Image (cartoon, rainbow, N blue to C red; front, side, top):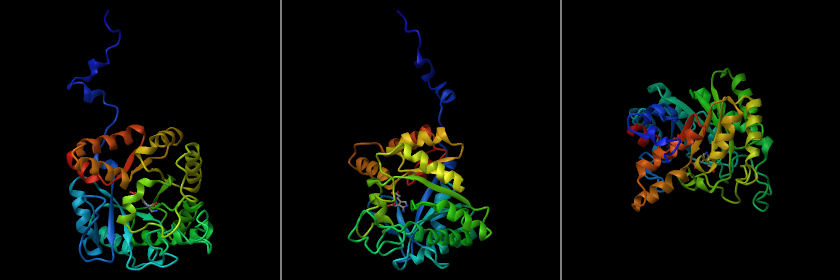
Length: 326
Ligand code: PBG
Protein backbone atom coordinates (compact mmCIF):
# COMPACT_ATOMS: atom_id res chain seq x y z
CA UNK A 1 0.00 0.00 0.00
CA UNK A 2 1.27 3.48 -0.91
CA UNK A 3 0.69 6.42 1.45
CA UNK A 4 -2.13 8.57 0.11
CA UNK A 5 -0.52 11.86 1.00
CA UNK A 6 3.24 12.46 0.86
CA UNK A 7 4.23 15.76 2.51
CA UNK A 8 7.85 14.78 1.90
CA UNK A 9 7.48 15.70 -1.79
CA UNK A 10 7.61 19.33 -0.76
CA UNK A 11 10.76 18.96 1.34
CA UNK A 12 13.41 18.82 -1.38
CA UNK A 13 15.91 21.67 -1.53
CA UNK A 14 14.35 22.92 -4.74
CA UNK A 15 10.78 23.32 -3.52
CA UNK A 16 11.16 23.91 0.21
CA UNK A 17 11.77 27.67 -0.11
CA UNK A 18 8.76 27.97 -2.42
CA UNK A 19 6.37 26.52 0.14
CA UNK A 20 7.98 28.00 3.26
CA UNK A 21 5.31 29.72 5.36
CA UNK A 22 7.46 31.99 7.48
CA UNK A 23 10.31 34.36 6.71
CA UNK A 24 12.74 36.06 8.99
CA UNK A 25 14.42 39.25 7.83
CA UNK A 26 16.77 41.77 9.41
CA UNK A 27 14.00 44.32 8.89
CA UNK A 28 11.84 42.43 11.44
CA UNK A 29 14.31 43.00 14.26
CA UNK A 30 14.90 45.63 16.93
CA UNK A 31 18.21 45.50 18.80
CA UNK A 32 18.37 46.57 22.47
CA UNK A 33 21.14 49.00 23.42
CA UNK A 34 22.20 49.81 26.99
CA UNK A 35 23.52 53.33 27.48
CA UNK A 36 25.37 53.91 30.73
CA UNK A 37 25.97 57.36 32.24
CA UNK A 38 28.31 55.97 34.90
CA UNK A 39 31.14 54.81 32.65
CA UNK A 40 33.44 56.18 29.92
CA UNK A 41 34.30 52.72 28.70
CA UNK A 42 32.21 49.87 27.40
CA UNK A 43 31.36 47.38 30.16
CA UNK A 44 30.64 43.78 29.17
CA UNK A 45 27.37 42.39 30.57
CA UNK A 46 28.41 39.12 32.16
CA UNK A 47 25.05 37.37 31.99
CA UNK A 48 24.51 38.37 28.34
CA UNK A 49 27.64 37.41 26.39
CA UNK A 50 28.36 39.74 23.49
CA UNK A 51 26.43 42.65 25.00
CA UNK A 52 27.89 45.72 26.69
CA UNK A 53 26.76 48.84 28.44
CA UNK A 54 28.10 51.69 26.36
CA UNK A 55 28.89 55.26 27.42
CA UNK A 56 26.77 58.01 25.83
CA UNK A 57 29.76 59.05 23.71
CA UNK A 58 29.81 55.59 22.21
CA UNK A 59 26.08 55.29 21.51
CA UNK A 60 26.39 56.36 17.88
CA UNK A 61 29.23 53.92 17.23
CA UNK A 62 27.23 51.13 18.85
CA UNK A 63 24.21 51.86 16.65
CA UNK A 64 26.39 51.97 13.54
CA UNK A 65 27.72 48.49 14.40
CA UNK A 66 24.16 47.25 14.59
CA UNK A 67 23.17 48.89 11.31
CA UNK A 68 26.08 47.23 9.54
CA UNK A 69 24.36 43.89 10.11
CA UNK A 70 21.21 45.15 8.36
CA UNK A 71 19.21 45.85 11.54
CA UNK A 72 17.87 49.39 11.32
CA UNK A 73 15.96 49.73 14.59
CA UNK A 74 17.18 49.98 18.17
CA UNK A 75 15.51 50.26 21.56
CA UNK A 76 17.38 52.18 24.21
CA UNK A 77 17.66 51.40 27.91
CA UNK A 78 19.49 53.73 30.27
CA UNK A 79 21.65 53.39 33.33
CA UNK A 80 21.48 56.86 34.94
CA UNK A 81 24.19 58.75 36.84
CA UNK A 82 21.97 58.86 39.93
CA UNK A 83 18.68 57.45 41.22
CA UNK A 84 15.95 58.85 43.46
CA UNK A 85 12.52 57.84 44.70
CA UNK A 86 10.67 59.36 41.71
CA UNK A 87 13.12 58.21 39.04
CA UNK A 88 13.61 61.80 37.92
CA UNK A 89 16.56 60.95 35.65
CA UNK A 90 14.11 59.02 33.47
CA UNK A 91 12.50 62.26 32.31
CA UNK A 92 15.43 64.68 32.55
CA UNK A 93 16.23 66.60 29.39
CA UNK A 94 19.87 65.73 29.89
CA UNK A 95 19.13 62.16 30.99
CA UNK A 96 21.27 59.37 29.66
CA UNK A 97 18.68 58.08 27.18
CA UNK A 98 17.71 61.58 26.03
CA UNK A 99 21.36 62.44 25.30
CA UNK A 100 21.86 59.17 23.46
CA UNK A 101 18.71 59.68 21.38
CA UNK A 102 19.85 63.18 20.39
CA UNK A 103 23.22 61.88 19.24
CA UNK A 104 21.86 58.83 17.42
CA UNK A 105 19.13 60.70 15.57
CA UNK A 106 21.54 63.51 14.62
CA UNK A 107 24.19 61.19 13.26
CA UNK A 108 22.48 58.05 11.95
CA UNK A 109 19.35 56.97 10.07
CA UNK A 110 18.45 54.38 12.69
CA UNK A 111 14.84 54.03 13.81
CA UNK A 112 14.99 54.85 17.52
CA UNK A 113 12.65 53.44 20.15
CA UNK A 114 12.75 54.59 23.78
CA UNK A 115 11.79 52.17 26.55
CA UNK A 116 9.54 54.12 28.91
CA UNK A 117 9.81 52.87 32.48
CA UNK A 118 11.12 54.05 35.83
CA UNK A 119 12.71 50.95 37.36
CA UNK A 120 16.22 51.72 36.12
CA UNK A 121 15.91 55.22 37.58
CA UNK A 122 14.27 54.72 40.99
CA UNK A 123 16.40 53.98 44.04
CA UNK A 124 13.92 51.28 45.09
CA UNK A 125 13.91 49.67 41.62
CA UNK A 126 10.14 49.59 41.15
CA UNK A 127 8.44 50.81 37.99
CA UNK A 128 6.78 53.85 39.56
CA UNK A 129 6.02 55.86 42.68
CA UNK A 130 5.79 53.52 45.64
CA UNK A 131 3.45 53.27 48.62
CA UNK A 132 4.81 54.27 52.03
CA UNK A 133 4.09 50.72 53.12
CA UNK A 134 5.80 49.11 50.13
CA UNK A 135 8.71 47.74 52.08
CA UNK A 136 6.57 45.91 54.62
CA UNK A 137 3.68 45.03 52.32
CA UNK A 138 5.19 43.58 49.15
CA UNK A 139 1.79 42.84 47.65
CA UNK A 140 1.16 46.52 47.06
CA UNK A 141 4.20 48.47 45.92
CA UNK A 142 3.50 50.94 43.12
CA UNK A 143 0.91 53.72 43.16
CA UNK A 144 -0.74 53.47 39.77
CA UNK A 145 -2.23 56.91 39.14
CA UNK A 146 0.68 58.88 40.61
CA UNK A 147 3.03 57.04 38.28
CA UNK A 148 1.14 58.01 35.11
CA UNK A 149 2.36 61.62 34.83
CA UNK A 150 5.96 60.52 35.32
CA UNK A 151 5.68 57.99 32.52
CA UNK A 152 4.07 60.63 30.30
CA UNK A 153 6.91 63.05 31.05
CA UNK A 154 9.47 60.37 30.26
CA UNK A 155 7.84 59.63 26.91
CA UNK A 156 7.60 63.33 25.98
CA UNK A 157 11.24 63.95 26.94
CA UNK A 158 12.31 61.06 24.70
CA UNK A 159 10.16 62.38 21.86
CA UNK A 160 11.62 65.87 22.38
CA UNK A 161 15.05 64.30 22.00
CA UNK A 162 13.99 62.78 18.67
CA UNK A 163 12.69 59.28 19.44
CA UNK A 164 10.62 57.80 16.61
CA UNK A 165 8.67 55.50 18.91
CA UNK A 166 8.12 55.14 22.64
CA UNK A 167 7.50 51.84 24.40
CA UNK A 168 5.90 51.95 27.84
CA UNK A 169 6.86 48.86 29.85
CA UNK A 170 5.74 49.75 33.38
CA UNK A 171 2.40 47.88 33.30
CA UNK A 172 0.67 50.90 34.84
CA UNK A 173 -3.06 50.91 34.08
CA UNK A 174 -3.87 53.80 31.75
CA UNK A 175 -0.27 54.38 30.66
CA UNK A 176 -0.98 54.24 26.94
CA UNK A 177 -3.74 56.83 27.20
CA UNK A 178 -1.68 59.12 29.44
CA UNK A 179 1.34 58.92 27.16
CA UNK A 180 -0.59 59.29 23.88
CA UNK A 181 -2.36 62.34 25.27
CA UNK A 182 0.85 63.94 26.52
CA UNK A 183 2.65 63.28 23.23
CA UNK A 184 -0.18 64.83 21.22
CA UNK A 185 -0.34 67.86 23.52
CA UNK A 186 3.39 68.37 23.04
CA UNK A 187 3.07 68.25 19.23
CA UNK A 188 4.44 64.72 18.91
CA UNK A 189 1.41 63.24 17.19
CA UNK A 190 3.70 61.42 14.74
CA UNK A 191 5.66 59.59 17.42
CA UNK A 192 4.47 55.98 17.46
CA UNK A 193 3.57 54.01 20.54
CA UNK A 194 4.56 50.39 21.04
CA UNK A 195 2.82 49.03 24.09
CA UNK A 196 4.21 46.24 26.22
CA UNK A 197 0.57 45.15 26.33
CA UNK A 198 1.01 41.68 27.81
CA UNK A 199 4.07 41.86 30.00
CA UNK A 200 4.29 38.94 32.40
CA UNK A 201 5.97 38.82 35.77
CA UNK A 202 8.71 36.55 34.53
CA UNK A 203 11.86 35.01 35.94
CA UNK A 204 13.28 35.22 32.41
CA UNK A 205 14.16 38.90 33.02
CA UNK A 206 16.96 37.96 35.43
CA UNK A 207 19.95 38.83 33.22
CA UNK A 208 18.38 42.14 32.14
CA UNK A 209 18.12 43.29 35.72
CA UNK A 210 21.87 42.85 36.02
CA UNK A 211 22.43 44.56 32.69
CA UNK A 212 20.30 47.60 33.44
CA UNK A 213 20.66 47.56 37.21
CA UNK A 214 16.87 47.59 37.62
CA UNK A 215 16.13 44.83 40.15
CA UNK A 216 13.62 45.83 42.83
CA UNK A 217 15.35 46.52 46.17
CA UNK A 218 12.51 44.69 47.94
CA UNK A 219 9.42 42.75 46.94
CA UNK A 220 8.71 41.87 43.33
CA UNK A 221 6.51 43.06 40.47
CA UNK A 222 3.62 40.65 40.92
CA UNK A 223 0.97 43.25 41.57
CA UNK A 224 1.62 45.14 38.38
CA UNK A 225 3.07 42.66 35.87
CA UNK A 226 0.82 39.86 34.62
CA UNK A 227 0.41 36.49 36.27
CA UNK A 228 2.10 33.84 34.05
CA UNK A 229 -0.96 31.63 34.64
CA UNK A 230 -3.23 33.93 32.63
CA UNK A 231 -3.90 33.73 28.92
CA UNK A 232 -7.30 35.41 28.43
CA UNK A 233 -6.19 38.37 30.49
CA UNK A 234 -3.64 39.19 27.77
CA UNK A 235 -6.49 39.85 25.35
CA UNK A 236 -8.08 42.16 27.88
CA UNK A 237 -4.81 44.05 28.38
CA UNK A 238 -4.33 44.34 24.62
CA UNK A 239 -7.89 45.53 24.06
CA UNK A 240 -7.44 48.30 26.63
CA UNK A 241 -4.21 49.41 24.95
CA UNK A 242 -5.85 49.43 21.52
CA UNK A 243 -8.65 51.60 22.85
CA UNK A 244 -6.09 53.91 24.46
CA UNK A 245 -4.21 54.39 21.19
CA UNK A 246 -1.39 51.84 20.98
CA UNK A 247 0.07 51.41 17.48
CA UNK A 248 1.87 48.12 18.13
CA UNK A 249 1.07 45.46 20.73
CA UNK A 250 3.87 43.50 22.37
CA UNK A 251 4.01 40.22 24.24
CA UNK A 252 6.85 39.69 26.68
CA UNK A 253 8.62 37.30 27.21
CA UNK A 254 8.45 35.60 23.81
CA UNK A 255 9.11 31.88 23.66
CA UNK A 256 7.36 30.84 26.90
CA UNK A 257 4.29 32.84 25.74
CA UNK A 258 3.84 31.79 22.11
CA UNK A 259 0.19 31.01 22.83
CA UNK A 260 -0.31 34.65 23.76
CA UNK A 261 1.46 35.86 20.61
CA UNK A 262 -0.85 33.64 18.56
CA UNK A 263 -3.94 34.87 20.43
CA UNK A 264 -3.09 38.53 19.86
CA UNK A 265 -2.30 37.85 16.20
CA UNK A 266 -5.73 36.29 15.71
CA UNK A 267 -7.64 38.91 17.67
CA UNK A 268 -6.12 42.20 16.47
CA UNK A 269 -5.13 43.78 13.17
CA UNK A 270 -2.37 45.80 14.81
CA UNK A 271 1.23 44.77 14.28
CA UNK A 272 2.27 42.31 16.99
CA UNK A 273 5.72 42.44 18.57
CA UNK A 274 7.41 39.81 20.68
CA UNK A 275 10.25 40.42 23.13
CA UNK A 276 12.77 37.59 23.07
CA UNK A 277 14.05 38.54 26.53
CA UNK A 278 17.38 38.39 28.30
CA UNK A 279 16.77 34.99 29.89
CA UNK A 280 15.86 33.47 26.53
CA UNK A 281 19.18 34.77 25.23
CA UNK A 282 21.25 33.80 28.27
CA UNK A 283 20.04 30.22 28.45
CA UNK A 284 20.91 29.46 24.85
CA UNK A 285 24.34 31.00 25.34
CA UNK A 286 24.92 28.97 28.49
CA UNK A 287 23.97 25.71 26.78
CA UNK A 288 26.07 26.56 23.72
CA UNK A 289 29.05 27.34 25.92
CA UNK A 290 28.81 23.82 27.28
CA UNK A 291 28.69 22.50 23.74
CA UNK A 292 25.14 21.22 24.21
CA UNK A 293 23.42 23.35 21.56
CA UNK A 294 24.44 25.04 18.34
CA UNK A 295 23.98 28.72 19.14
CA UNK A 296 23.40 30.01 15.60
CA UNK A 297 20.81 27.35 14.88
CA UNK A 298 18.82 27.69 18.10
CA UNK A 299 18.88 31.48 17.92
CA UNK A 300 17.50 31.42 14.37
CA UNK A 301 14.89 28.80 15.28
CA UNK A 302 13.79 30.85 18.30
CA UNK A 303 13.15 33.95 16.21
CA UNK A 304 11.50 31.98 13.43
CA UNK A 305 9.16 30.43 16.02
CA UNK A 306 8.11 33.86 17.24
CA UNK A 307 7.28 34.88 13.68
CA UNK A 308 5.45 31.61 13.02
CA UNK A 309 3.32 32.23 16.12
CA UNK A 310 2.32 35.56 14.61
CA UNK A 311 4.85 38.22 15.57
CA UNK A 312 5.57 40.85 12.90
CA UNK A 313 8.56 42.27 14.73
CA UNK A 314 10.91 40.98 17.38
CA UNK A 315 13.01 42.69 20.02
CA UNK A 316 16.01 40.45 20.53
CA UNK A 317 19.58 40.40 21.79
CA UNK A 318 20.27 38.01 18.89
CA UNK A 319 19.40 40.73 16.34
CA UNK A 320 22.93 41.36 15.08
CA UNK A 321 24.05 37.72 15.07
CA UNK A 322 20.96 36.45 13.29
CA UNK A 323 20.85 39.36 10.83
CA UNK A 324 24.49 38.78 9.96
CA UNK A 325 23.66 35.24 8.95
CA UNK A 326 20.53 36.09 6.94
C1 PBG B 1 11.73 47.53 32.50
C2 PBG B 1 12.07 46.41 31.63
C3 PBG B 1 12.47 45.11 31.97
C4 PBG B 1 12.75 44.47 30.77
C5 PBG B 1 12.52 45.37 29.75
N1 PBG B 1 12.07 46.57 30.30
C6 PBG B 1 12.69 44.49 33.28
C7 PBG B 1 11.57 44.13 34.15
O1 PBG B 1 10.41 44.38 33.89
O2 PBG B 1 11.88 43.60 35.21
C8 PBG B 1 13.26 43.07 30.62
C9 PBG B 1 13.91 42.77 29.32
C10 PBG B 1 14.67 41.50 29.27
O3 PBG B 1 14.68 40.67 30.19
O4 PBG B 1 15.30 41.31 28.23
N2 PBG B 1 10.49 47.48 33.11
